[in-house]
Length: 264
Image: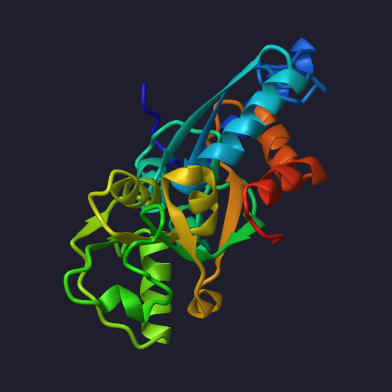
């Protein structure tokens, strides 16, 4: 059942006060809460940018091992679509976005519990088919006649970053398609349906030998900060708090670094 994500401040205070009274009188806490010092348990639902799929999946498995009785489920996709789902009431505990602009869509709606924190940064690379047969070595090469280039949709963080980099390089090109998230753009190249795509370097690394990466200096003008936040109406606030702590811990940063993310 989808819960409304837009309760009034008064109703939130009332519900919170009632919960405190019940817990104080009953001497116990609800499942998944940490008001009585209980360890995280139950299902944790994380909405995360598609570019976090590999690293967050690894962290989710680690979280389940460290907290027996928990199960982490992920919804990976374009950050803007995930944000829209959250503000429209989709039940989730944690949101990790690929840009601060996208996170603001959720914070401005009053749907985060406290201020989000940046846990990683990412920059762009050009993904080409293996062997780079078109000899792409710069952003300008993407404007070559006949070259099939795909970009992320302008509304999602990887698309906005690509546009920033292209503008910085003075490059004007018309892609053959705009994709809804970075994984979809990369897949076009991996399947040889496109010659190149502008994606995150972490996705190039995750794709292994399915694509080849080309670095370009304009990527320095479009580095994306990745924020994470617990959600205000999280069904499992204790697990949400623990997962955010894992992501921000040295252990979490090691996983993210291994995936190609840079420090926050």
